Amino acid sequence: MTGIDNREELRRSAVKHLWMHNRGWAEMAERGEPVVMTGGDGVHVTDNTGKRWLDVNGGYMSVNIGYGRTEVADAAYEQMKSLAYFPQASTTEPVARLAQKLAEITPGDLSRTFFVSGGSEANETSIKIARAYQQRMGEPGRYKIISRKASYHGALGLTTWLGGPVSGSTRSDYGPEYPGMIYVPQPNPYRCEFGGTTPSECAELCAGAVEDAILFHGPQAVAAMIAEPVSVPASVAVPGDEYWPRLREICDKYGVMLVADEVITGFGRTGVMFAVEHWGVVPDLMSVAKGIVSSYMPLGGSIARETIADAFAGGDDSRFLQHVLTFAGHPVPAAASLKNIEILETERLVENSAETGAYFLDQLGELQPRHPMIGNVSGLGLLVGIDLVKDRDTKEPFPKAAKLGERLIAEFEKRSLILRPSDTSITMGPPLCITRGEVDEIVTGIDEALGEVERQLAVRAD
Image (cartoon, rainbow, N blue to C red; front, side, top):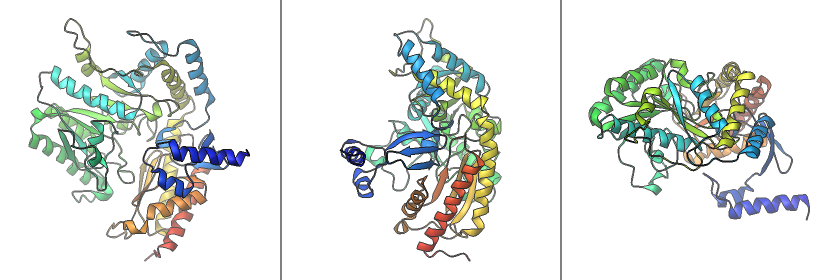
């Protein structure tokens, strides 16, 4: 059997047996997918035909240090050789050292980490901690959770329902809706639900809506609010500077715990180690994953402030957290994470995120006058996005029949870019090691792809 035959057999086997997330195998078979990747280096990956691609989103905005860092693999291998797991009621050196490291680099008194396997588990754990903490504080009626419309916080039992109903969402497959969910507007300056005309105005209005929701449901019923510092509901929603300090103030006023979902934004993505640092806010709980180990292994965590964690210290009443996961505190991904964080720090990748991200945003901004489909460009660090519109003045989106996302994906593939936009936005979060030259390559590809799709859809500048 030839190499080509082997490759095609593998692809067909994947279509027949593999259940990939957010993809249907009928669609993949029709498109000659899935692409089978075999190697990676920096921002590039290579498939099993030898084709080299630029991965614009670094996995799921998660391969922060880039592909091919054998130092991380070596750290995991060495730990696995010495101790691959741990006995009950014990821990290991890399887990203890990682918990200490996180206490050192996270804001304020965030100082105790419950380790999990990924972002969904991290947010699920944070919500459980928030509810349990309210119980320990003598507030058993506090169970409701506030989240923002169109946000995404995971795909487990409770986290599936955070972020509110979305048009066309398949959450209805898993109904009925989890009880106690409260949804508030997203502080997206470009599409402010309240009609705010500036980031500051939108921030104030959306923060005020959080207070209104707490008062409507009764503070005695609300346990926590969860929010991403910078959200990716449609493009990249960077809130006005007033938003996060106001959230902290409101949550303190009513005894509501504030949970920052830093699964995407943490570990340098927005140009600082953790995005809440942009606004000087310390949340009660912080959920992390992705960049904590650059997705080289499954790892995440819920990090609590000292005063919150102390409620679970145990003692005679054994009031520790009743929450057990087999792979929580696994030594191998912890060892990999320590090396990953070392690379982020020693190679100044967080600083590169800030500097190269600003350049990326400027270059995308220069495309806007040339492409009427670009309604808005936004971002922070290496989390950047484009809002796509049919009419820039009204912000009207393209109809589904236009298949805008599909057309763009096809054009990006022709240019060896792995980038999967929706019908309304292009969101990008490349590895933090990206260079200006690689940013130019992406921007050129976007420029060409938009031009071709505008030609296909007969979109013309005014």
